[in-house]
Image (tube, rainbow, N blue to C red; front, side):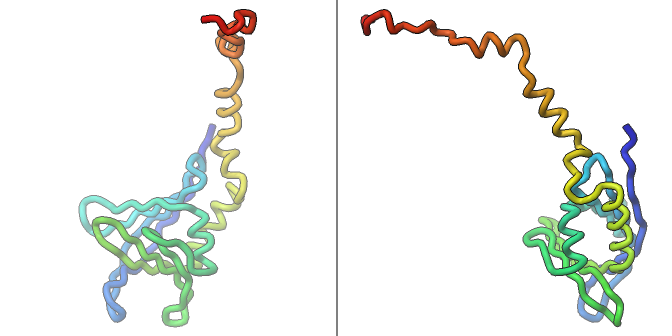
Length: 159
């Protein structure tokens, strides 16, 4: 089965202080065989890129209103009259505040939602089929379902 991948390269801004930010190349990645998640890879200039994965639903909601708590918080705002999406990421390695162009993120999200509409993610996973297969009775189950202990009511309570 073909699992489409929806990618988008874009430049985010890593906010260092209210006056200072640096550009960070990033890649948004959506894998239809992992339909609930979005992946963002940041190329920070170090040898290993930084990868974050969180719920697609969180990013979709974050385009419209502040959402998330803990490790990932997302909210829309305007910076210099441009719509941006702020992402506050916390990890044991540190915290980062990133600004993404809202239009680019929204366009990419729309592509993911066209390919896997909200509410159909489970179909992509084939969970129903896998569960049905797991739960299908097998000949061995027939043995388990029989009462292994014949009724001993005739024993009149004697041991």
